[in-house]
Image (cartoon, rainbow, N blue to C red; front, top):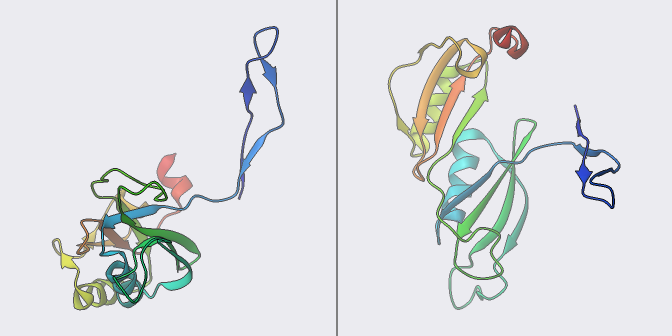
Length: 166
């Protein structure tokens, strides 16, 4: 579902309306300390069944000389896309400052198995799987922290998000 936002820009008489801006998706971007993005991609594949859609390596790092840094690796998890990159100070990097942790919610029918798989891949369990009013739209919720400082809420949806907001 696309979200439409009307843009207003300054014109001769104060402001002028221009055509609407349409957003079709949002892609969370995970930035990890270089050179750990490749390890993060492998972790997300093993822990969450991510499929690597595309990858752009740093143009100045030669594979035969050094481990190539990742400028962006697009991963598909379910029907969503997540981008992962190495944190560098280089001018070609899209992100040049440290980002401290993010929280993501993954919905699944088998929360316990998903948490166990993530832990087996190297995540750290943060408590027991329990009923989670409000988190991930309700249902059972397990929480893991990946090796890169991101928190993943793994839940089963029992309510629609619209019902929770009402």
